[in-house]
Length: 473
View (tube, helix red, strand yellow):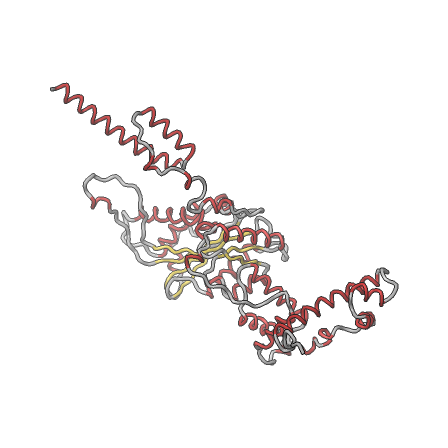
């Protein structure tokens, strides 16, 4: 006697049975609808046309419920709650934050405890999770893939294109307006670190190349957020300590009243501060006039804004948290691409200017400098341009991001600079630079031009000196 391919107690058999049950239920509903529309003369014809048992269709027409629905009162979650949980799973997966089995059971427990009458029920176990997965074949559990660090790098064309495809899909699905896309990130600043700049010093004196800076080792973490419509949200400044004092606040000049301050033991952000930023800054400052309008928040994988309370609050307030690929924020994130670089350079210039008359920069002085730099750099126009430079528009495109990857464009097909012949006359030199300016990066053409110009001038000077010596002889 041939054996069954699967035991009735096996997971494979139960999954196949659940799929058959759902398919049969769809056919029963279709047959009942066709009867209501008059497409068949009898229940027997409708059952035969849709390949369902006549008795089942007859019972359904008499008001009998499916066996699964009749046992709803014995389930841990109601059908409506299960549909909500399925939608949460789908949302988390499409935004890059897939739930683990433990987190899924925690979500189910939270839903159950939201009803005080059921809060004393036993905890949701692995058995319930297995039954839930069998009952809903549209979701499944599998192992995440672990890759080497080199392969995990997000700055690849395939990963970037797939991310932009998902971004376009989720913006269409939730009808996210082009002005309701935001990007938040944190960056660190050291109070006394000035930037490098070009200086004029005597030749042959290496020590003259060094420049004084305050050298204060204290640092701050700043959470910035910008919007694709030019929005510049209030920031949160986190420093090391216990309490933000009124005396510090009074010594700050030109600081907007909407800025928030916080203290931690190490001056870094945390789960609690990430949640505080979302509740007190982002949500109220970006809240649309229509509550049903969705916002999209682009974030990286930092733990402070990927915690469960943070993500849950986002979805509860119609905010879609959208995760950037790992190791690709330097070419994809609007704040990294167009904002943080100029902002850091502006702050360092102010620190360099202050180094001539102060030996130490404290928190109030640094915040004052940062306010001056932000007012100058972080304008509405630059915020809009940051999203445009990152390809995040109404129709997202990966082309601008891919152009910033090493080896993109025509660079890799061009001849190395050292292989080009050095012009032997000024006319040939000008022609060479003109050609380079058209077919290669203009900045490199200017660099090459300056080098050749200096070499040509030195050669001409040497020839002139030789002529003078010959004439004297």
